Length: 258
Image (cartoon, rainbow, N blue to C red; front, side, top):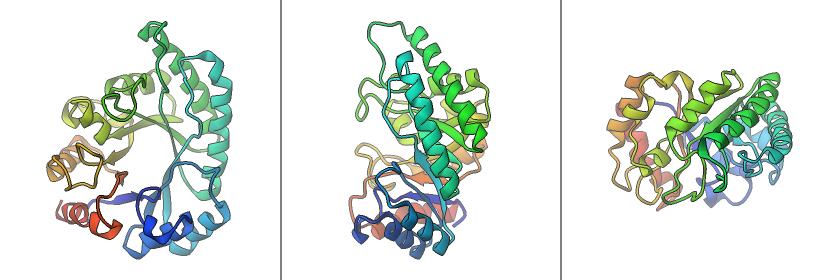
């Protein structure tokens, strides 16, 4: 395919069962050599590591575990600990990106103040990530449908935080699904900011189904992201409305044509 794709095996290839290693093998059998996961503490890491090695697959992203309210300074020590734990697992599995969000906002504290407190947490986390040779990727999450109360629900706020930290240990995960749910467009949000983007994830609107199942013109969106300068793979983090293999058909055809 002309555009590289990575598949989230928490959501795709579930037909193989609960074992993440088996899902990685299924993804490889269907031609996908890059995969993404969420948590690590609930997985048999020996089996994950062996599946990655046997298939030659790359683990492109995994989560920093724990949904913490980073606008509360009391959470920062725990956050740094979660970053360190994720970075150590990432090193073992050959993953270079660990994903986090801002957490929910606090209604009793001004938004600008909360932004500064989150930046402090991200700075501390980025230092630990950089020491381990990995990058925290800060994800924009929509508050309209999926993550009510999240503080950083716009791409601009995430970009501002990444720039404020100014560390190789922190970059942006631009989630196009969440951005589009918030009424944003890549052209408007990433023009002049593509340098901070480390990864892009996609899913269709309105229901987070596979690309081609909803209302988004993905050929146009992916072409636009490439024209903006994004050169990495597109992460497929969607809830399939049909079998995994069938759900991948439209986006693989689009990727092959671009």
